[in-house]
Image 1 (cartoon, rainbow over the protein chains, first blue to last red):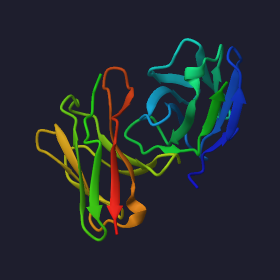
Image 2: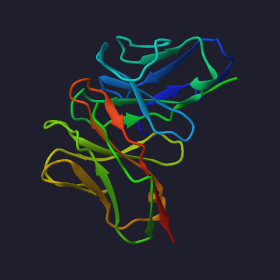
Image 3: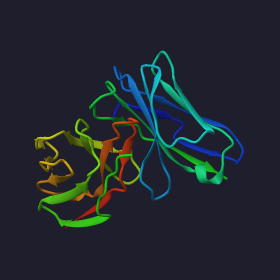
Length: 113
Length: 110
């Protein structure tokens, strides 16, 4: 158990819908990262927050947005969902923003029908 | 963007050392190399990271070439539970994006 929690574990929805994925980092970790892993693909970095501020942005679509709240939990919002958005979405956290190991949550499996 | 290149798959006999290479020729001088592994569809697990010097921990050793353009992760005595996809990761110094390669699928054979 990494100490990072993600909810929900599974999510099934339809095209065009909007969903919110939630992540609670390990106690004391200030950075949160979001990743997307499509079927049989590698991990794609989406976005990083540090202490509430956006720190780095990766290959995140404009239909996706994220934020980190004052209590340090984070949410990833996915809107106008398409079939290709079906994937595993991982959240990770680390102590700070530099040279740190990241602890990954168990992921949310999103299926868009 | 920074980039990493890894062989897609490797086999290793149980009890032998597994040596997993990674090319990261575009890494900048002050960025670390990180290694993670992923078993099935679980969240990736941190293994080790390094900057210039070789590193060792209870899980593995990391050998980084002097020019820092490549590195090798060594699992000294591979077990069946080490069967996983191993990712070599670098951070792009300009955008701070973490770049995961496609990973090496290591199969440890009994």
